[in-house]
Amino acid sequence: MSGELLNERAQHLLKVLVERFIRDGQPVGSRTLAKESGMALSPATIRNVMADLEELGLVAAPHTSAGRVPTVQGYRLFVDSLLSVQPLEARTLDSMERQIESQAEPQRILAGASSMLAELTAMAGVVMLPRRGDLSLRRLEFLPLSDTRVLVILVISDSEVQNRIIHTERRFSAAELQQAANYLNQALAGKRMGQLRETLLREMEEARQSMNRMMLEAIQMAEQTFADDEASGQGDFVLAGQTQLMDYAEMADMGRLRQLFDAFNQKRDLLQLLDRSLSAESMQIFIGSESGYGPLSDCSVIAAPYSVKGETLGVLGVIGPTRMNYQRVIPIVDVTAKLLGAALNPRQ
Image (cartoon, rainbow, N blue to C red; front, side, top):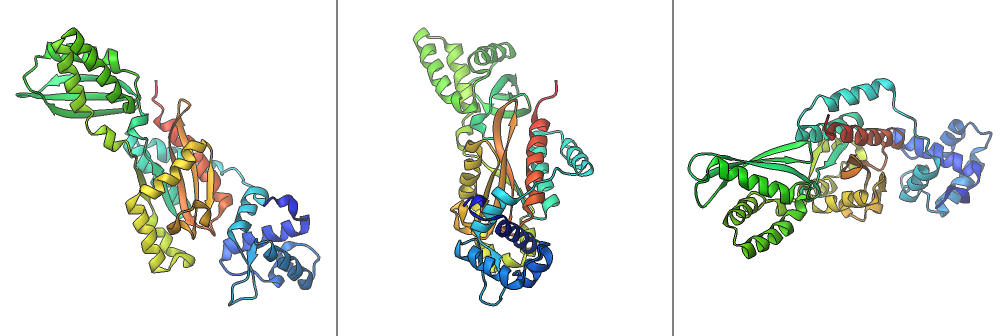
C-alpha cells in the first residue's frame, strides 16, 4: 500500500505508533499517541484514525490490550514511505572501516563482516560467501612434491590464493609441470570456476584429436584439482550473533526459536532468500511473512549485495525481529556491503 492513500494525519500517527512500538515493544494506546504526536488531537479522534488504519490492515489490536501494534503491511508502508534514514556518525564509520580492514585474508574479512553486523545491531549478522562458480581463475602453478604428489597453487579473482595437493599417475619433473601449467593457464585463465569443467572437456577432445599426451596429462591434473568445486559451488554463508535473538521477548518462544536455528543450520532456504537479493542487485527488506519462509515469519531480513570491480559476489545482511530499528540497521547494512567490497578488492 502506498502512503499516498493515507492523509497526512494518518501517516504521521502511523509513523509515531511504529517508532514507539519499535522502541518499547508494547501496544501503543490513544493517549500515548496524543502525547507523542505533537498534534492537537483528542484521544477520541486518534481512536477513529486507529480504527481506519486497522481496517486497512496496517495496525492490529492484541486481545490483551486496548493499544495497537503494527502489522507486516504497516511496517512495509513505514519502511517504504515514512522512514527517514540518516547517515551513520563519522565515529561509527571509522570504527567499521578499521574493523573490516584489520583482517587480511578474504575468509577472515567475510567472517569479520558478519561479526561486525551482529555486534552493531545486537541481532544476527549473515554474509553469503562468494560462490566458487562465480569466481575467476587468475592462474595456477604446479610444484613437485615427494613421489607422485603435486602441489597446486591457485590464484583466484586477484584476492584469494589456495593450495591443493593432488596425486598423479606418474612422477613429473619440474619442467613438465611448468609446461602443463603454461598450457592450462593459456586455456583457463580468466574463466569462471563454474566454466572450468566445460572448458576442460573441450580441451581434452582437442588434445585427443592431436594425440598430445602432455596436454591430456595436464587436463587430468586440472580435473583432479577442481573435482570438488562443483559441489562447493552450491554456496554457503557465515552467521554470527544468532543467540542474541533470544534476548527479544517476541522471539522467546522456544518452539519457533528451534525452527529458526534449524533453518540456520540447514542453510538451503536462507540461501534461496539471499539469492533473491543477489539477483535484485540492490538492498532488499523482507518483513515477516514477506520472505515466504515459515521460520522467518516473525523476523525481518535486511540484505544488500557486495561487489568487487562492479561484479556482485554475494549478499550480506541482518536478521532480527520485525520490531527492529530499521532507521539504524539499514545504513549499517548498506555501509558494511560497501566496506566489504572495498576490502575484498585487491590492492595494486
